[in-house]
Image (cartoon, rainbow, N blue to C red; front, side, top):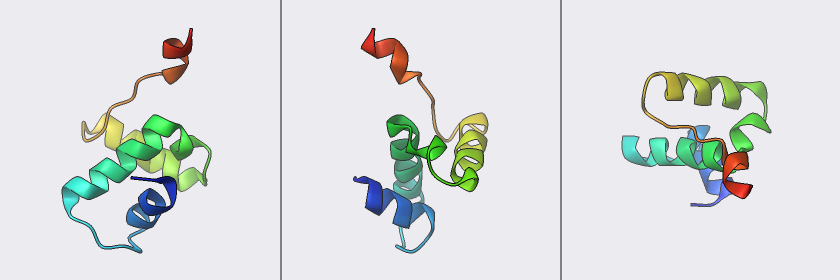
Length: 64
């Protein structure tokens, strides 16, 4: 998965199965892109985390 494909899947420009959609959102969360793109991405990512579809780990802690 790369950023352009993940974005296209999340915006439903590329048709994907449910698991692939979750993988795309997880990619955006893991890379931090979900919070760097338009607000809709961050809000949707947060909702998916809250609902248990995706997980969030603060990657800054891993760089120390």
